[in-house]
Structures are given as C-alpha cells and as structure tokens.
Amino acid sequence: MKQTFIGILTEKMQNAFEKAGYDADMARVQASNRPDLCEFQCNGAMALAKRVGKNPLEIAQSVADVLQKEAGEVFSEVSVAPPGFLNLKASPAFLSSYLRTMCGEEDFGAEKTKTPKTIVLDFGGPNVAKPLHVGHLRSAVIGESIKRILRFHGDRVVGDIHMGDWGLQMGLILTEVEMRDPSLPYFSKDYTGEYPKEAPFTIAELEEIYPAASAKSKEDEAYHQKALDYTQRLQAGERGLRALWEHIIRVSVSDLQKNYDRLSVSFDLWNGESTVQPLIAPMVEKMKQDGFAYESEGALIVDVAKEDDKKEVPPCMILKSDGAALYTTTDLATIQDREEHFHPDAIYYVVDKRQELHFVQVFRCARKCGLLPEETELKHIGFGTVNGKDGKPLKTRDGGVMRLEWLIDDIDKAMLEKIKTNPEIPQEEAEETAKKVALAALKYGDLSNLIAGNYIFDMDKFISFEGDTGPYILYTIVRAGSILKKAKEEGITLKEDLLPLPETEPEKKLMLTLASFAKKMEEAYEELAPSVICAYLYELANDFNSFYHTTKILSEKNEEKKKGYLALLKLAVGVMETCADLLGFEAPERM
Ligand code: ARG
Image 1: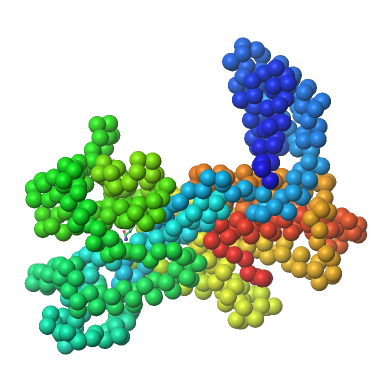
Image 2 (image 1 turned 45 degrees about the vertical axis):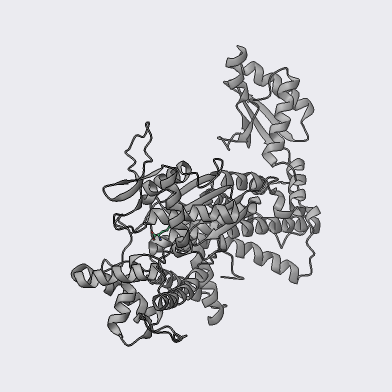
C-alpha cells in the first residue's frame, strides 16, 4: 500500500483544486474537528482566498462541484460551510476496499522507509551493584517502545544499555569487600595464582555493600583515600582488582538481565562506561593537540558556550585536577566508539531530562572536537519524573528509594487479585496472565503521558479495567479475540474479502479509525512519541467496544454479513495487537 488513507483523500482534493483552477498546495485533507458534522475536512479554500484575493466560499464551492462530479468513488458527501470549509465524508465502498487491501498487506499497510537510518539508542543506563530504582523505569519503558517504533519504520537500531560500571563506586566496593574479608587473594599485588571462579558475594550482598561503603567513605577519610587508590589501581589494570571487578559485573549483569526480562526490555549491546576507558587517553591528547582542550585551575576543559545562549553553558570538564576522567569524558569517548563501530546517522539518549545540561555540553563538545561527522544527529530524549500522589518523586512509604522490583511486585500482586476473581482461570494461568496485564498497566500508565512531562504513579488507576489504561486495552483485545475463537470453533472460515460496507455509525467509525493506522504510526515515528500510539489504541478500543455493543455478531442470521463482521474483527485485533507490541506489551489468552 503506497499511500495512507488520508493521503489518498488529499490527493483527490489536490486534483479537484487544480481542476477548479487553483494551486493545490493548500489542499490538505485532515480529520474533522467537528465529528458531528463530517468525518474529514479541508481548510485550503480559506488559506488560498487570501493569496488569490477571492471569496473563500466561492473557491470551496467550485472545488466541491468538481469533487461531486469526479470523486464520488472516494467521497460520499461533500458540503461547503462558511467561511469556506469543505466538509467531507468517505465513501463506504472506498473505505471498505481500502481496509480489504490493508488486511492483505504486511504491517497492515504501514510502509517501511526506503531510506533506513542507523540509530544507536542509549537507554536503560543502570549502575552496576546498585538496584534499579523507579527512575530507571522510564528509560527502560520509553527506550524499548522507541526502539520498536524505529524498527517498525524500518530503521536499524542498536540498543545500548550503557551501564555505569566504572569510577569511584567500583573503588568503594573493592574497599569494602577487602574490609570484610582481607584473606581474599584479589588485593595482593604479589599473588600470581588463579582467582576463584565464584564471586565472593551474592547480588543481595553486593547491593548492601555499596551503600555501606559509600556511607563509610563520607565519614572516614582514610577509607575514602583507600577507595580512591583502588579506583586508580583498577583503572591502571591491576590484575586482582580487575578479576574482582569482573565478578561485580557478572553478578550485577545477571540480576539486571532478570529485571529487564520482567519488563520485556532488551538490549543489543551491554556496553558500559568501562568499555571506552582505553579510548579516553588518546581522545584527550588529541583534544589538547587540536587546541580545543586547555588547562584551567588545574582541570582540563573545553569551552562550549555560544553567544546566543539564553542560559549559561559552562565549559565541558574533561579531566579533573587529579587527572581523573568524568561522566562527561566517558560519554564523549562513547560517541567516538559508536562512530567507529556503527557510523550511525543518529544517536538518541533516553535519559532523565534533569541531565539536559550535561547533554548540551557533551553534544557541543563532540561537534567542536570533531568526534563525529557534521550530519550525525545527536538527540537527548529527556523524560520527566515518576511522582507519588503527593506530587513529589515516588518513594517507599518510609521515604526510601523505591526499588523497581518492589514496584513490579506490587502491581503484579494487585493484578493477580483482580484476575483471580475470574473463576474460570486456573491458578497457574492466573499468575502468568496477571504478569502480562500488570506489565501493560505499568507501561501504558507511563507511555500514555508525554515523555518530557512528569506523571503520578497511581496504581489503582493504572490497573483499572476501565478508562484510558493498559488493562482496558488488553481486555478489549481479549474480548474481540474470544469472538474470533468461538467463530473458529463453529467452523467458520474467516475471509477478509468479505469485509463489509459500513451500515451503522459505530461500524463506520471503527472502520475509519482502522484506516488511519498507517498515518498514526507515521506520526508516532516523526514525533518519537509512544503517546500517539496510546491515544490511537484507546480510540480504537473505544470504537471497537461501541461496535460490539451495538452489533450482534455471532448471532447474526445473514451468513455473509456475519463473516463480514468477523473479518472486521480480525483486522481490529491485528491492528490493536501490533500497537500493543510497539508499546512493549501483549495480550493474554483470556483475563
Ligand atoms: N547511569 C546514569 C545514571 O544513572 C545514566 C546513563 C545515561 N546514559 C548516558 N549515556 N549518559 O544517571
């Protein structure tokens, strides 16, 4: 399918403008602002009237005359309303034939791009040895959905988790592990034997070790110095420390993997800040030689301010006065590394919007120092915070950090209670189903908001089966799916070429919404906005439900008609499932 539904309507409109003797550039058809009056509208006559100095009503009328004569197969109604609107309805036969084509197309007619881009998507961003908290939820959920939206469009995406696995936090852990068991072989420089295969800690211990070490180092200067020393020795590649560090990474990564699996979130690359450490020294050297980086108060910096900056953009600090590299330095080296490996057209970062200034500095510095070609796009997709009902960032009841695991446990549990009220579902299935629906509740609750906005984590609202929620969407898919299943059990074969001509308002509305699928997916791609898909899915679910409530489907006596309804249902389920998949969740068999 080369064209979107609304694209075809626009093309007809453009032809009509030309036939009536006008330029076609303003002849755009859009969804109606007044669904009570019409399905589509064109405001082109008003825009054109100014240019050609004519009465808009007159222009609209002459276009309408052409449409009525020549475009009857596409528009069943064309009327003119002051001051110059063209109000339109789509022809039922045309709508129906468009949907039939859609049924037979891959991705229901949403075209893959002819010019795919290579995009590195930096999301997740967990820190090893620290549990994921609710702040990591958005990066994971939004990043996963954007990854799917980009791929659906046809782009090549490399999802990179970019773990925080380097720096002082590692030195702190090493220090604390030694304190607890000085007999371990990792700390002695003279040790030449093999190191144990087993890590000397579990993930639970590791998660307790880091905060303990961090607290101690704040109070105890000697402890702090030791951590700094270990950090440096690790960075210098000392064998024992390196072996212990690898244990930290392995234990953490397998735990992270479990958590991301639970969220149906995956990465192509499990790189971290450590990955690019070897690149830092030569990169910094070159920045100095090229005259971009210079010393100031002992530190090495690159100026990145611009004359027209409204807010001050401080210089980018590359090395601290003690010679240590920073978060910024690592991000710069990572850009160089990505350029080398993937030569991407774009790098997108799905990171908390409070890091905006960091990314402004990094991007400017990368461009100034020529770390990547001029035309490579760098974009920070900054997201807002998840708040509690008090409007402040979500915390546990006693004010602690809300671990992501606990949040998922809570929502799984609450959902299981609801699913268990359906006596037909056996316990084991209920648990699986609850997990699926809970995931949809969590993800939809997040993605239906604008990315840059904050939202309130309102569990009761998120898990509700009614309203603009994930469970409502899944419930609708399951309901439609169960009718199809019954039809199959009755031996009815589904044929899309039987797709009906719309007869009732709800039926036509459902068909029109289905017809706008490809266009909506384009919009979601262009705006990088999963919320566009949520809004579409919600509209579609509502349309399906009004159709369902006003139409007898399986009990319809006319066999042709019944098969037509079923074909429509099948398309609706397919489109809804595709949208859910782009958001990163799926429907259970029943709920
Ligand atoms: N680990 C960082 C944090 O927890 C997020 C990393 C984001 N990605 C990046 N390339 N800077 O804040």
